[in-house]
Amino acid sequence: MLELDELVARASAVRERAHAPYSGFRVGAVIEASDGRTAVGCNVENASFGLGVCAERAAVSAAVAAGLSEWKRLVVLVEAPQPVAPCGACRQVLAEFCDELEVVLVTTSGLRDVTSLSELLPRRFGAGDLGEGRDAD
Image (cartoon, rainbow, N blue to C red; front, side):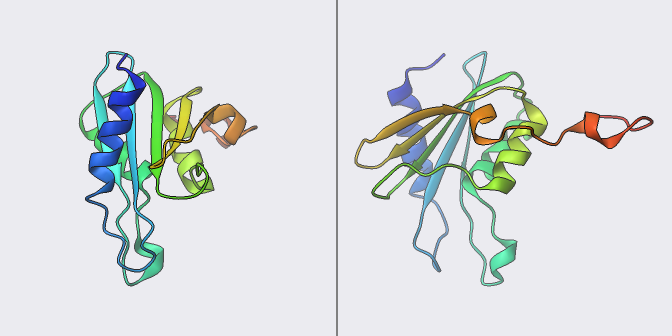
């Protein structure tokens, strides 16, 4: 696993590329797999607000496209007074790919809060909730 400071630096770099002309709230995210490979994502807003993509979901897409498996850690970096957790939609998308994940919430001023996906999304909805006869892949 990479040092946390290296992951924060990668989140900071990708956060700078965020497209946030409406909210001004730029977010960078990094997913780390068990083999140390990473995927990054930043938020991409759209004038049609519902079409925007959160940094966490952008990182998920990049991780899937890169073939990263066995995710171990997610770092989310924001410029805010306090660390900010992923939205509910991002939590559910993350839960699709891993049962457990360390989630490190960081501010540009250096505040850090370490939690887990299971703390952020207890009693998640998963493939097992779809009933019999459904494939989970």
